[in-house]
Length: 376
Picture 1: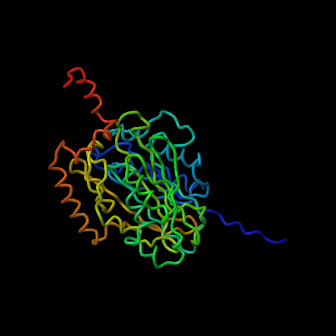
Picture 2: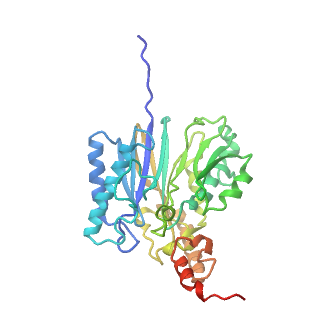
Picture 3: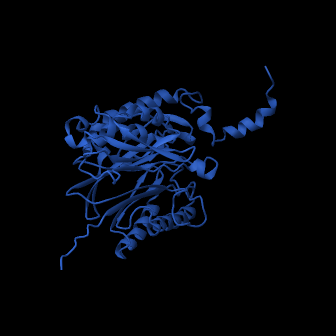
């Protein structure tokens, strides 16, 4: 009898939530990390998980998990939910700020999507070498990933491989979500690059969700090679309950952008929405995980990059990539931009335009004073 070789796919799930800040919105208390590690260690011992890493970015607790159960797995999502619930109890005992603020439901409904936590997941067959970068952002929304993800997979000035690697000549396909109308569209690059930019440049509405290889790539066109969490807390809750603080997973090398090409977009501290009360524009500052404690007016926004090598689902790492001194210049530039933007105070362009403040307290002020307006 001929033996049939079955290649198991690996799933990497990154699920994050703000379940209590320390102090205010700055950091994650060590007790919350301890609880999360204990619960995920138990799940690994039972075989529920292959491996895990518990991280943080600002006041967000980050669960990085590998398993073989596929994306949107109820069992894995419930594990994450239960971990956040257990952490919330600790946060309440310690009177941490906003304890459980990202848990927008009292009961798990089978999937954490739409319940508050942010989710990015990829399922794929591991290659001979499988480098993966997990990006974690704080004090911003999913649109903050639009520019860097576009540059990773479609900008040859950032990614030389698009020009000199034959397997990348077919470009990449971008799955874009319209977060207002609840619909999606896929753009093929490079042929539809200009059209795509017309949409994703409006980062408050159109966000890049996934990226797939184009024709001729070494990686299957059916396997996403990048995924961004696109959950918008304000739209779920109907009011401002904190910024979305997105995460992303990006696979690298061998037909995909090299690790250095994936990181290169973050050498530019691009302006993003968020910062204080989710109502301001500010520069995205790449930093080490221990530096991701935004304190200047709860900012400026931060991004952490954790690098792993996957080995049969085992997370080899992480390398805390933005700890590298080569990002010192970017951090300095981000501080200069932050200083410049802060001098505008409550005026645009530091404060977001009115249409982007729909879920803040501004509508309450508009309602309060609408009777005082008279025709000109």
